[in-house]
Image 1 (cartoon, protein in one colour):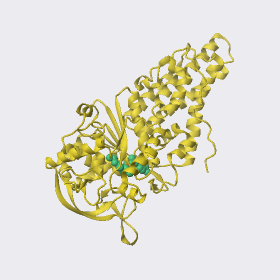
Image 2 (spheres, helix red, strand yellow):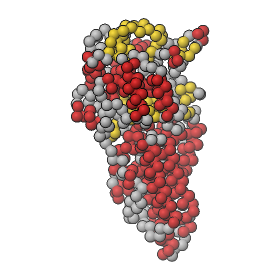
Image 3 (tube, helix red, strand yellow):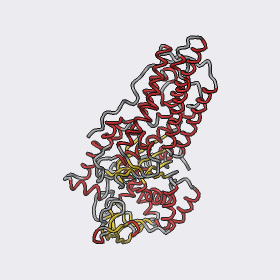
Image 4 (spheres, rainbow, N blue to C red):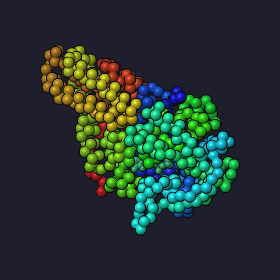
Length: 526
Ligand code: ME8
């Protein structure tokens, strides 16, 4: 059963290092989705946070000569939270897996499973990748130099681990999961991810080791405190503990389960197999959708903490601005596919699509309303076919963008629908030539000029609403320049569904030439 709240989550990121472009990619996508649904007037909850337990964090802290908790506090406070603020991420909460509100509930959840007979004690021996924090199957490994077994994702040697552990009876959930995927074809997105999961489950699932006893940086297993809970079981539960699981039932039911878990494709199996099985085992509702994004690549490899080639999100925002950054990756890469970043591509798109197509349109229209009508938006007394085509164009952009971004998480398709409309309005101005019409001082000429400028300004009103979830600061600047705040109220209060209703911006609005939306780029930093 879905809850009344549209609940979106990002993965909770490991704090072994500072965030990079890849983490920001998923978090920005979640933010745009969140803002889109808010702009529809829905109740929305957006959760992000950090994954702070496990061997990877413990070893990093050791190498830096501090305790794991000190390490996590430093990274969260100095790197992760400041980046999300900088990128204008509108998360409602930030969960850290070392918080008591989380650890207490994790223990209760696991204890419940144990009491229900879903957990037993057993032994396991197998190759473990600390980078993934996961036991690997033969198919997950590749051969390195001298026949060493490497993790296919991290390209680092796996460690052979042998432990007595507690196991969750995951193998029993295969048929139930397959039935669930069958009944909910939209549960895993995109199709390629769905197929991967289906094939994996069809081959038969193994029981899951859910505790570790060779180190202690984790949540103790409540009935056997020599063990700590496996970091992935601990981590997945953040989606429940952050919204009141075991602490505030009314709040929990209001928000849980997630409508969309956004994840990178590297952690798809945890979210699409283990997580729903854990929930089924404890009689809790399963999420609506797991949407996997592709990888940002550098030089043909997944961008990771070790092969960043030195680019931080801040290096790009200081050059292109925060809004252009938020826009670029969703615009340039089809969501779900892998994609590469290059300065050249970003620069070219910034200049042609943002500065020339969008920014110039906004500044030209404001300048002409200023010049010909003293900054007061005129009425449109002479609507004809050309204007009706623009009205229809806006309605189409609204419907298209709403379906693609809001429902399908096709951010690229949605953004393109809006930018097609931007092009249409530019084409309309080129054809109508208001600067020539302005020379005709007859009443008819004035009416024509008024109509053209009203049409363009009203089109920009719609564009500001549609791009607000993607580029909120830019939309606000445009909103202010159109005088729309005084006429229509706050931008955030404008419903997507109503954005296509023509004529919202009443004549008389005070149009001013506001700040340049997309300044010319300085030379690329060396
Ligand atoms: O896996 N391209 O944390 P993590 C696109 N703690 N997205 C990328 C990326 C890239 N090159 N690199 C990272 C973990 N990401 C666990 C999650 S959730 C209960 C626990 C993004 O710090 C992508 O969303 O390794 C990926 O899934 C996530 O960062 C992994 O972050």
